Length: 318
Image (cartoon, rainbow, N blue to C red; front, side, top):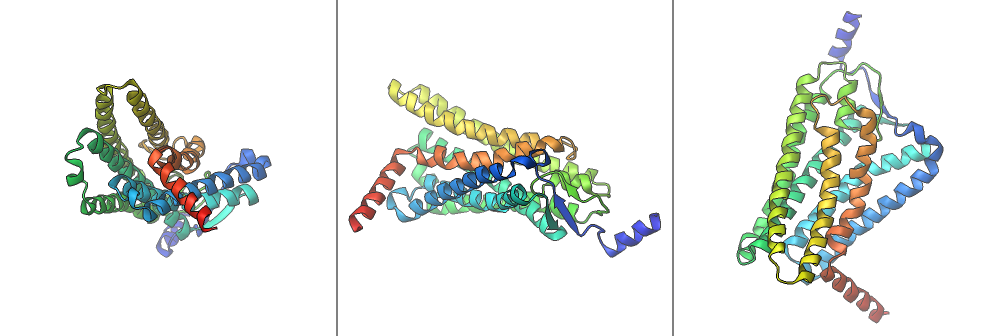
């Protein structure tokens, strides 16, 4: 037996494909869940694409905040499009087969884009802090060059942080079983299926996930705590209420995203709590992408005005 496994290890991995299990307990609700998640996916795509379109088209939105928001929306669209089509196929047709290479590619792209989203959230928090608490210095600090630089840094950091552990895990030996108890290829389930010793890889991933999540969380806490202090000092009760309403909605989305990711990824043994990871992953892949366009942009009066003007132009052209 040992000689056979040694031979297989020399010839490459024994498992050539994985099977994504999805939600076997909810198979009888497949069509209903398909329709609900399809509507959520389309709404998320349309909301995020609307943000990107109006930011590009309207000169009034050519500001650092909307540049960061449109970058955030683009990454969100890419992220959900990597995961949700597979989820829809599972709801409609049951278990889905995915090749070894495609599975690890999906795992890397999801983690890379997910890490980039958190770095962008930190940049958005800092942008709001500078705009509200340092208004005189804001135009100088957030120059167009700095904005492009910050988005590029977010992408590079997301790539570097997630590439190493995923590549290392892909080099480990898989001899079976090959059923992934999830609706997409994620790091924890893949580490659990490996026949090799993955403790060191899991610890590396744990440390990197810890850095990404808690570094960006600390930036967000610093930014919003300073913003709250500034809001409290506002003379008008109406202004305070409006500012608190905006901040509280931002903080709700941040809490959902950080909470679910801490639950899924911040654990030394990635194979623990796999059964509950599926439900927690739905928060970041379905719920928050649906809420983000509404909370971060579409509630904004400036955006409302831009949309009204665009609608007026369309009606006049007719």
